[in-house]
Amino acid sequence: MYLIVLAALAGLAATPANAPAPIAAPSPAPAPAVEAASSVVAAPTPRNSWVIVAADATGGAAYDAGSIRRAPDGNSAQIATLFATKAPMSRDGAPVHFLVANNEYDCTQPRRREGAVLGLDASGKPVASEETVGEWQAVEPKSTEAGFQALACKGATPDAKLAEGPLKDIVAEFQKRFAK
Figure (cartoon, rainbow, N blue to C red):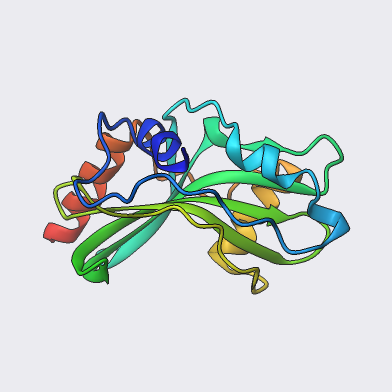
């Protein structure tokens, strides 16, 4: 289910050929601050309104403004993010230049975890996917992730909006930067 949501967020019609059959996400780690998070992660309404917040000739980051969801108690939030890199990463043995992730943030402390991940090649085509809920990871102060956490949890405005539009346009913008 998460990959269907990510594919919709990405504006893609299909998931990659090597996508595994849907599996149930493991129960979240016991933490009172994130009890309502599973409903937040599983039910975004994609709008495909991506915003680049950091970019240079080697990579950058963006988020989908329409994907932000906060738990009713305010203790957790979800946002779809994109990390772009000129030098490919390897994911499921495929070269990935764009990583779209459905991230969950704990709004009571600096930590996050990935829900589902969709890897795109240099042309923006899906080539890898993962549907598990990852382990909690610390969010470093003043990092891109800290900015995404403030945006998702508190509605903070990003320092920069370098480009906006559907994911295909955002991928094209990064491709132009990488060609330099």
